Structures are given as C-alpha cells and as structure tokens.
Image (cartoon, rainbow, N blue to C red; front, side, top):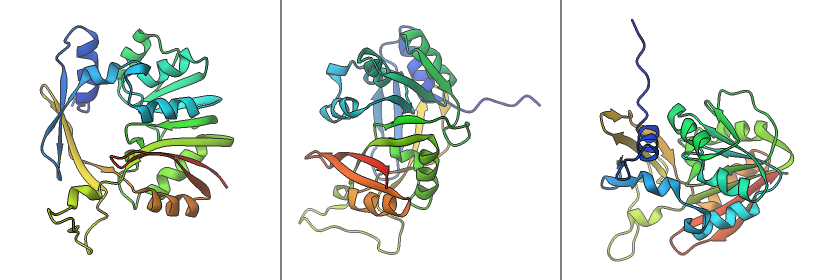
Length: 239
C-alpha cells in the first residue's frame, strides 16, 4: 500500500503564496482560543517588517547560526544580509523548496530531533520556537537535543511568552486547575485547503520556569527583552 504523505498545511500555504496566491492563509485551531488565521504573507516579512523582539534577537545572533523551524526563510535571509553563515532547518519539504527559491544558501530539511547534529554558535527559536518541546515533560529532552547542536560557547536565542493572561477573570483573579497540566501547554491543529494536522502539543513557558529547567539542563538563562504583552527573548548558554 502506498504511504500517504503527512499533512503539511504550513508548507502548502507557503508554497501557494510563493506561486502567486497572495490570499493563502493557515487556519490555526487551539483548545484555549478561538480559531485564528495566519496569513502566509506574514511569513514573508522583511527585517523592517518584523516585530521589535525578532529584530532584537536577530541582532544578537553571532557565528554560525541554525534557524530552527525556518518557515519561509525570512529570518535566515535577514541574517544572510548581515553577513552571517546561517542554515535554515525545516521539516517541511515544500517550505524548504521556497526557502531555496528565495535565496537561502544553506537549507537543511528534516526533523530537528532525528538529524545528525552539527555544531552551531547560535540556535534561533523565534515565533515561540521553544514550543517544539511540546510539553514541560518533554522540555528536558528538547534542551538536551539543543545542546548537541551547540558549539562550545554557543547560545540559544528563543522567544516565548507567559500566557497566564488567558486565564484571568474580569476581577483580575486567575482561574487555574492546580491539578491539571501546566497552563502554558496548549494543543493545536493547523489547516490549509484539504490538509489538516492531527492535534499536537505546543509549549509556552514563563521565564522563571524556563530558568529552572535550563539550570537543571546545565544551561544559564538570561532574560534579554521583556515586552508589555508578556512576550520575551531569552538567551541560554552552557554553564
């Protein structure tokens, strides 16, 4: 029996936009929020169109950079323009094809957890890239995998946010199930056209908890940028 390809709505939308469908958009479903639309156009933004936190993180990148979950390749292109050696790592074959067509010089296609790691000076995890860990229970494995991709003295630059505000009541109190999972563990599905992913876990983590897990992994966590909307940029380095 022929094996069907895994659904890849993000790659499908990126490819469709590149081929001329400027209205291509991914529908994002979550267990804690209403369905949302992610226009593929957003993934093609230039450096000047990026949020301040992304610009800040890109300016902190140094040496040989690995852009993990590179999407349409916009961060990689911005770093290339700054003269850095950057590799765009992407699991989606279609997104990787678009990256190459846009001029990304080094494109690596595959699963971050399964590829043979090579040393990099900066690992880049923007657009809540640490969400790839999935859950708190899987975060130690994720951090250990990151360490295998890090050169001596290397850094992990990541973006995440504290989403406690999602659980705030009108009076300012917070309603949490103390016996449930960590409030930053969400479940998502993505859809474009006829392609829809199965539900998958995605982690948002507050900085204090990230600091704790980093310490246990032998990493130092440094808060570089804190924004009013609870987004932040952090740097992890080997202790």
